[in-house]
Length: 279
Figure (cartoon, rainbow, N blue to C red):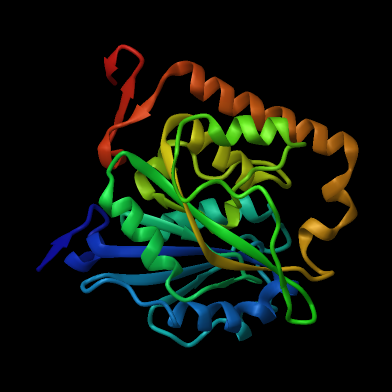
C-alpha cells in the first residue's frame, strides 16, 4: 500500500515502521563510516521494521563520498561548498530526509552494539508517554579496549527534569550520553532539532527533551564512543573557558524556559499539552 506525499513522492507504508539513523560527518571522521555501517547491519529489528541511514556532510568536499557505503538503505547529502556549520546544523539538515516516526543519532566515528536499536525502539513503542531513549555508552580507546564511567541512572524511565538537575549538579555533565539518543521525530522537530551552537548542541537537545518529556535509559551497553585525537571534542576550542561558559548558559536557559512553560507532548508526541490543558 502506498500514498502520495505532499511533495508528490510515492511513500511506502513501511515508512511508518522505519527508524531513520542520522549521522553528521566531515572529512577527518569519514574513514570510520564503514565501521558505523557494519554496526548498523548487525542490528536486528522486530518484524516489519526497517532502518534508513541519512549521512549528512558538514560542508561539501570530495573527502567523504568515497567512504559512504554502497547500500540502498544509505543516502548521502552534502552542505554548502566552503562552509561548515558544525554537527548540529548538519544533523538538523538531515531531518529533511527523515521520514519515519523515530530518529536515531549515530556519530560517524561511533559504533552501535548488537541489539541497541531494538532495545531503544521497544522502550518507545511500549510507552507512548516516553519521548526519547538513551543507553549506556563505553569509550572505545585507540588500542581497542573500552572503558566505562560512573553515574549511569537506573534502568528504566527518566522523569522530567532529572537530566537537567544532574547535569547542573555535576559540572555540566549529563548522566546519560546524547550520542545514544533515539527520539520521536515529531518531538525532535517541535524542539527545533539540534541547537545552533559550535559544540554541546547534542547536550542542549537532551536537556530540552528532558524538560518536556519522560525518557528511558537502557543499562545495557548501546554505543561504543570512539576516542581519537582527531575528534572535535578533543580540540582546544571545545574547552575554551569563555565559550564553554556561554554554551552552558544558553543550554541551561533553554531547558529551564521549556520547563517553565509546562509544555508536554501528547502520547506519541502528536502535538503538545499546554499548562492549562490541551495545547
